[in-house]
Image 1 (cartoon, rainbow, N blue to C red):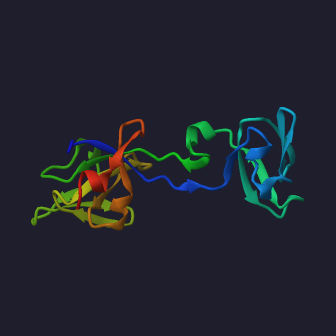
Image 2 (spheres, one colour):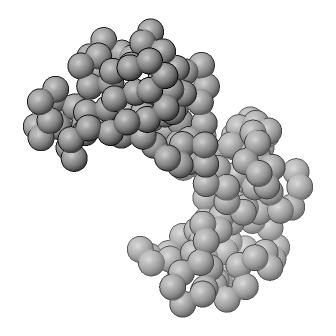
Image 3 (cartoon, rainbow, N blue to C red):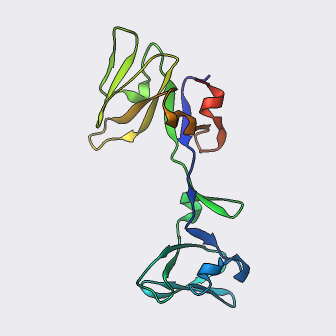
Length: 185
């Protein structure tokens, strides 16, 4: 396995969005809240009424503040933050840096509070406590940077249930395969 990899969690389904190209795309329960008027959409929202072109992604939520019971709006950043697969929208995953735990810690964690333990394991201090992993049984994962500039990171062990939820990807987030299948526990 490569030393430095990119991973993300399996994206969760975003059930509150629909792309509307025509009337047939509107779910029955939203037919009073999203109306096709020629080449435009009329959306019932808490602010009143919004107009949008056909083909946009419409977000929706239940609401007591509209006459139809739903608040609808154009998700303006859908192309950036969502991926559409067979008409279902998923939140795009955040790509994280990772590296298998071995005899030294990765350069991308420089500045983190890390110690090498006598038993060969490594421990990283996190905001919620400490996380420990052994070489060959865990991964260093960097989520980003804290306000003070130090790495926001953790150790992901192969025994954690969440290990099964990570996908190996390229730097752009294109999936390669499940981490647990590429590097089984």
